[in-house]
Image 1 (cartoon, rainbow, N blue to C red):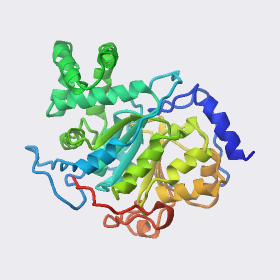
Image 2 (cartoon, one colour; image 1 turned 90 degrees about the vertical axis):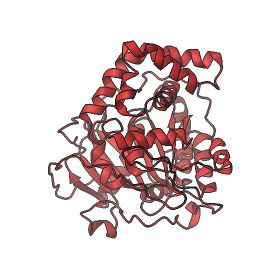
Image 3 (cartoon, helix red, strand yellow; image 1 turned 30 degrees about the vertical axis):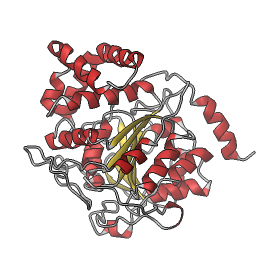
Image 4 (tube, rainbow, N blue to C red; image 1 turned 135 degrees about the vertical axis):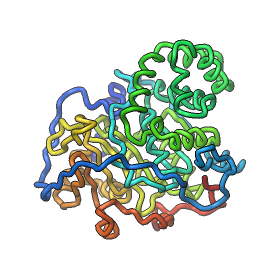
Length: 412
């Protein structure tokens, strides 16, 4: 029995006890000790918030649906494209998470903005509303939001329903006020009109129970997180229109499962659309790099400048938090092709071993306190170290990750 097969068997039982979600960190203190010393670290304070790009990147028809602030809306999908996205299936997950990560405790996603701005392409991410901030920054063309927890999936559908009824962040947040209970309930009912009565009742009950806590959390997202989907009206508008155009799929699924991730890879290939952003939050705290996980990630069509985003809890030795604004998480960017290569090699069984190997190869570059990059390319070093910012490159890698080329997706 191979080591990866053994890890697959272990993970299948272990994942029944643990949920990966919105960066809450593992329950017990752990230690990741680098195998080699990191080159001298340059620590600076970030000068101000980085703004989200106002213009999407991509070719094809643009929508005439533009808000008063000038934010272009995504173009309608063709019937064939809708059908391709609809073929991505959720998975039946029988485990019950010990904790529901319906809100994020990552507060400095703006550290990632220089690596995301205007990438377009397909976005794949786990956890809750922090994905909206990243989708808006990247101006993603389609997005797949995957979580093992049904409550997180239900919450995305609640947010989508409320956004449909709220033209701006203020109107959205107002729906969480006690006086708006009736309006919010009606908006959710409209958004879930195609669901069974039992499904609607479950989601409505969840919203009623969590409304007050979500109101406090979302207000913090708006007031304290620079460039977030609620702080930046253009970002909100972009995400709202992405949902309205059916360009965001919300799915209950498992990163190590056999259905959802495989379907995402097949769908993006059929659309000739590379995955430019894969956001894992701290999901790797809860999984091994099993054969199936490796297959799921390496099957995603990627370009040379596709990125993986992860957070690492500061409890892991050698990965300090960014301090100001977020004393919990280290934010990391890795070239997605590099991560795929390391998974395909079979030599890395988990994040700890992968990071140790990257450190030993001197492939980790510290940018500022709490932010690091793995496998910066030559093009990067000439652009203040930002990771693979060649905006014009949209050709998928040759070999296993080459995307097929039917009619190209209508761009936002």
